[in-house]
Image 1 (cartoon, rainbow, N blue to C red):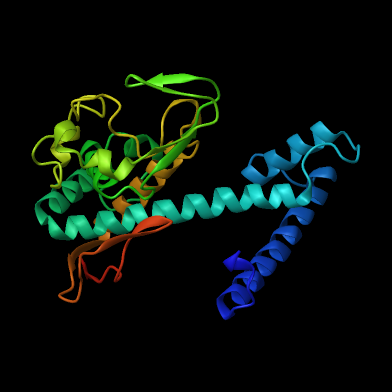
Image 2 (image 1 turned 180 degrees about the vertical axis):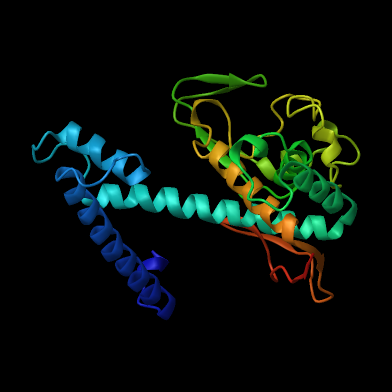
Length: 270
């Protein structure tokens, strides 16, 4: 109810939402006309979405997705992917500033594979140390701190029976910090725990799930990790970094897990 009150913040939010929708309507309309006229490929997300929608509706009103539906899909992919990956990279820079020995190991690996050239897809998949670091950051500071699931039938979990329609909250942040699962150093940054892969990192093979799991696992998982590796590799090639004395370590949750007072980091060109 609070979001409908005519407060300054709410008016600003509605104005931003209106502006985003107008921009998206223009982009969608332009893309739709180009596809119909054979002037554009449909090999990007919006193109695939529009082409699939055209085939489904087949020119019939009321079938397929509306423009508003397409706008919501685009907003979801863009904002959800941008925010979570941005937070992951922020925490990674903070943690590597706190642990320069791991920063140096990651930089050596990146320079070994790419030198000063632009990182490419084939070699990004070979970055073992960088991958271990990103996994450990996702364990300690997962952008999404909890997940929800809903029972669609009577279910028994851990000896407890749940009826249909029960919402279960999975406290991802707490599970990722549980010493009974991860060991006594559960609260410490130790990428080495992922040296033999995710399934061997903890006492339970499914204890690490920053992107969820099962049939509803995040569809952007592989892209997010690829994007993070690319961005981190590019930074490591060009800069060393350390925390500013003004930095205060205070993780807090506002939709995603963020540094409450910002990430004051000093970059030094190398």
